[in-house]
Length: 211
Ligand code: B12
Image (tube, rainbow, N blue to C red; front, side, top):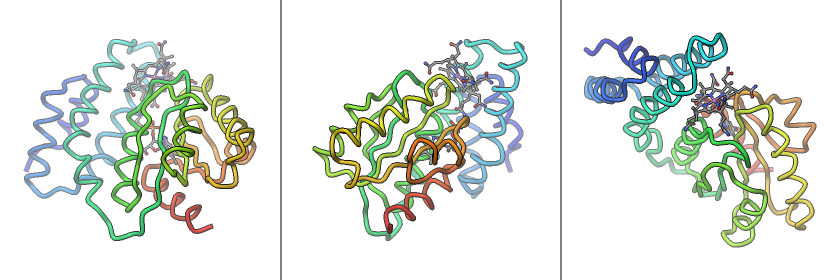
């Protein structure tokens, strides 16, 4: 049985090799992928954020931690995304313009895929035009936006306004999420749904898909 605290420590220390190896051992020992994410990996990233806030960590440490998190997540992603039997709705997922954080977005994407949604991942720094093009050209019925910076939260409203202006607001539901986003903010900008977790994102997507 692997020592799962090692996974937490490896992410904290930006040690991608150990993060990957511990994840492999944990999976081989039959530990649930979601348990690894929720109980060890996310708390490690939260601690990284806390240290960054206290000036104990700086951008290089942040980058190394993110790289270790991604290395572990890459192994889990296909498992989290193991197909369900739901009817497929198509989601265009992206981190908004000006924002390069993609760990949460990727997790949401994997969970949505696992929940039976087809996900078109538009990546990071996604402009309103790119979201609109996905709706028009790829028959997307849900836009899911992620933002991790208070300075990029307004880009969500800009995108919703642009979707409205493009005359396609009626044909698409809009979900928002990311650490600084709240239910109140989601309502204020006219989004159709919000969740603070990747698992909750699936529930929110199901809810709006039915509406
Ligand atoms: C890793 C990280 C980075 C990495 C990102 C690497 C990558 N590929 O993503 C790097 C080093 C690049 C980075 C850069 C910066 N960062 Co940074 N970063 C973080 C950190 C430590 C972790 C973020 C993370 O991945 N969390 C783990 C994931 C799983 O959680 P999550 O993203 O919140 O996602 C979950 C939910 O929110 C939700 N969710 C997410 N998206 C969506 C979407 C939908 C539709 C739904 C429904 C749900 C949902 O589900 C997810 C899973 O449960 C946070 C601190 C923190 N604890 O949040 C700071 C943090 C976000 N960064 C911060 C800052 C300031 C920056 C920089 C400006 C630093 C600098 N001076 O250069 C730059 C900005 C670059 C840019 N333009 O984007 C600040 C933001 C402060 C603020 N108030 O805006 C934070 C909060 C750190 C801090 N405490 O000060 N960062």
